[in-house]
Length: 539
Image (cartoon, rainbow, N blue to C red; front, side):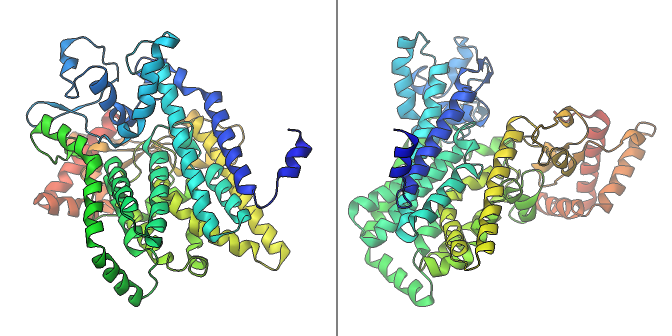
């Protein structure tokens, strides 16, 4: 089809379809340009690495090595070069500490790869390039499904033009692009898709609460929570969707009570995806419910949220590294006029998500591009974003309209630039600082010397796990500790702690949780900081 024929077929009404085709072609091209599935240098695999090792481990352990308990690792039949991650349990067994939800999502493409491996001359070991290839394009399949369903949701309430612009912004103007291509097998694109489908089913269920829709809604909710338990907060969308008054809330309670049998079916369906996990936990630990993150000391500190840092910090601030989502948040204002009864449920969901995620011990969620944890919400946040775009397009003053659309376009381009910077390590994966950020701001050719230099801000993992947030500015001069005794050094660090804006509060909360005195907690903290500064063991 020539350009002119293509132009003839392009209309505003079918613009969402063209945007979806463009996004899928763009994502596919990105995958082939970077071809992460061919990077298979032992422990440095291009796809099955970091958290994915734990998400994925259930599949090869069960269906290739026949032992999800990982006891085969002790038999010397496999060189475990970062193929399996495990944690020790109280009874001395090995446990994969992340849940099996993503393995369920990976499974169809794992089995296709396993079937085709001999055809392409690859070993059926679960870790070769063919397995990684199908994982990457399996993720793209799910993302395509999510975008198509999001289009259907948006077209219920908005024009095709608004829908097309919204999809384009989400597709290339947020970190959804990075986590649908470069690190596609991480959980975020999957959660985006599942929560988008969940919203679609909610809309259908409130139109007509059939038994099939009830079952599917419950099972999907169970899978969403199995992949990331904190996503149980999406329940607020289900409970409060369509409510905009006290009368509406009362009517919703009556409606749910009238449908008690269907709610019981929903609960039953919710538990179905959890059955493999319950069986696995019971096999390893003897318990049906087990907190596998406990071995690492991972936890929430609900008395110490880091909301501002989670949203705006140079380390991982969501709105700093994905600024176009500021427009989505602002869109909650006009959303009330565009979709009756949607605003309350979305506000509750977003507020709870931001609060809970900012209470996790590592509120920046380790290595990653920006506030990656919030990608899960993008199917929901598309609605207020579309509402704001509708308002912008309705401005009577042409200059104002074009200026706002131009600024949105700039933010999309800026996002792509930041994605390039992150890909090239100009944005550090977990130790970014204000100084390091501005070294490369708006530069097409970025500088990365700071990665091994003194512009980063390293976190103290041991103290952070205790809720005492210590970050080491690598540009500081700590040589003053070399010429004094250990006792004097610890006293100097103690004085620094007392002058800190945040550390005294963190230490008080830690002392209260552990039922120890504040001086004792302060001494422990000072000793840790002193030795870290003297020894420079930051990883």
